[in-house]
Length: 127
Image: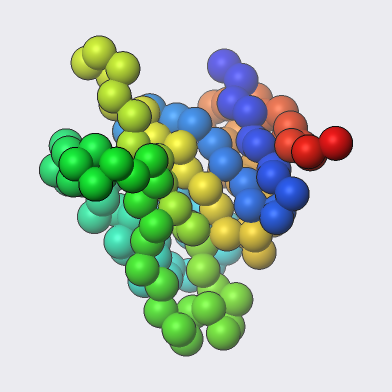
């Protein structure tokens, strides 16, 4: 199966996955990078409580949940996850994980490969 990694103009990388795949991907990315950060722990919390966070986001008319980040992690460049978008399509729960700009494409690609996915990098430009 193929997953598309979208890279926007700000160099943030996004991948759409099912809820289970998203948690596995975050674990694999943190393992490859070699550390965990506060935003990653927050991302796990959001994913494990998907329905509650989905309901809160809809009530506040928010598409994305921006995760809290430690100032120390930001200074060290150790932020992994920038934001999450929670999606429900019928009974299927999906997540768009947007990684921080400092997470390298190669790491995301390798993590997806270890989960059994082929990857395609898609660069989004305005012009």
